[in-house]
Image (cartoon, rainbow, N blue to C red):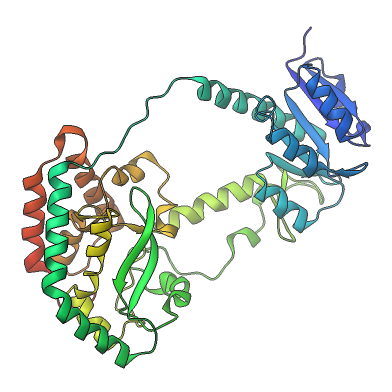
Length: 399
């Protein structure tokens, strides 16, 4: 019977897989070093997965992994690194290199590793098949009427407002030290430098993490300082000491089973909101509060419009830490529309005094994206949103 999993093992402990090698569905080929492993791969003998010890004669397992990734013929073969004793630095380096998996032999079961290899082999095979399929590349093109309107409005407003902007910049500089403008990375249809007048004291970015937990408008989860990964897995608690219900993982010096890690990670993602909006932000200066309430701090974004990074109307560009969480189809749909200074979400939010749920914001972003897709785009719809923005510019709350 032909085995369905051909494993190439590189290292000095072939006995680790001895029992598993008796399985008729698995064949394990053992070589001692990287040179013999490369020779075996070049011989075109079937290899569905590679298991490599970290320490090898003359080099390390990372050397072999780097060589494999440089050769497209072998780059989709799952690669698992084995270490005899856990080392957090090696683990972090393996994670950074995107090695498929990492196991410590003195705490791992060979059958668990083989089960993982079965999954990785099937998964990588599907990716290889998908990459071979012809895909149609969707080319993004800004409607000409929208782009011309953006250039006309942005250049006209900047020309008229420039004397007033100089006075505001002087007021910002007199109230607090630091640059009068603020640049951050934002994500729309691409990542770009986003310009604003500075409305907060210098160094306020460092306080965001703490404030996001305490005052985030979208965060409805109960506040807690407990690390979810430090709690014990209920399944492992029922097993004899030293045994685990699933594969052991390592977070720095901490051990956690794969089952409990996945469970706690999903729970944390559910409780933490994607978006961050600080209510009555204490970092805002007096001048900053004025320019926020009147939206004057947004005027430098007209430079982004002239550069083509943004449009006058669109979905708000997101900070990188927010955008990287929008991985689902329903959530990432908002990026089908260009980033804008104002839009449906901004108008509705300001009209409601800054009170809006995360779900409602997502719905409004997607609603505008739907109006922008394909032949649905309407220039007059953008004009209506601009007209709705004017009465919402002056507001009592800083949102």
